[in-house]
Length: 382
Image (cartoon, rainbow, N blue to C red; front, side, top):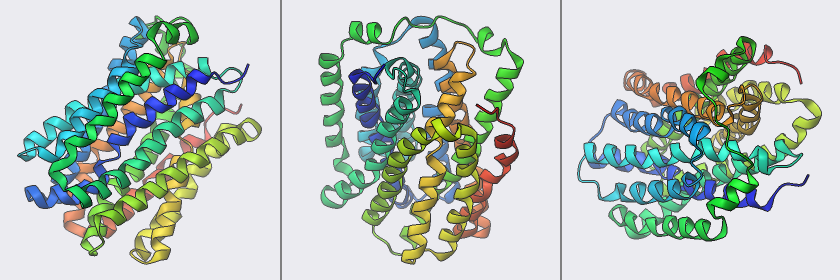
């Protein structure tokens, strides 16, 4: 069966949901200066975003597996877009964190349902379908840094509420083009399961734990770069637009490469490509940090981001295979718990940076994926 056209609408919702999440990287140095923050307080922003957008995903995954929740595909991008767009008018650091937390909950509500319906909309091309869904989010996340950077440069940070308008348009368009009844029909029956089915098979659950650890290790490096590299760039007198362009190129190219890699996995298997992502991104990132801010350093950092992120759809599909008939829960554990725990590390990593400097702190975070090498080698062969 071919990929359903409905999948592209879900991927479009993923794009617009994640474009707002991509706003954070360029505004870290702006918020740091506006509120007089330390590196560990900047790390707290990343941690709060991770807690809301990631650690809450298993809760939403459980609800959707049990009760459906198709409307989250429409409403979540609206919630995310409106609240994240209001960050520019936050009058204090606590108000900024509150808006961020609530806005990121919208992102958390979207991902489990979107990821769980994707395989049923992919026909016989599950790898390609998941890559399309992931690429939608990755491209949105990639576009976010450039959009917010150029917008702030032109209109100022306090004008960001204007950017909520696209979220409203997207939510309305999806309601009209993809009604809830059509989504339910296309996506087959909602799975009604409990945590018990996820834990029933110990072998399957052990594989899921390895996948979560691999994704956690990769995300520490990625989140370390997206949180602290902008601060490092601005400290070298680079404009905020340079931050936006670098991360947009890195993440957009990674999204495109993930589609090719997902197709390639049908021949090579997922394990080899996941291992390549874990091992291959580290030397590129480390060399890029040491050579930055030279052009060679920027290129190496962009390449490292591509390599570290291209395995994301493969990890999600792998997790769903070992989900115990609970695809939304498996997706939320992989994307939510892994991403959330990686976000929690940003505060201690920021504190380390205050003692040893941002450059060496970035090196430490980019070396982190190597701890997952053994877990990759123990993944089942397909």
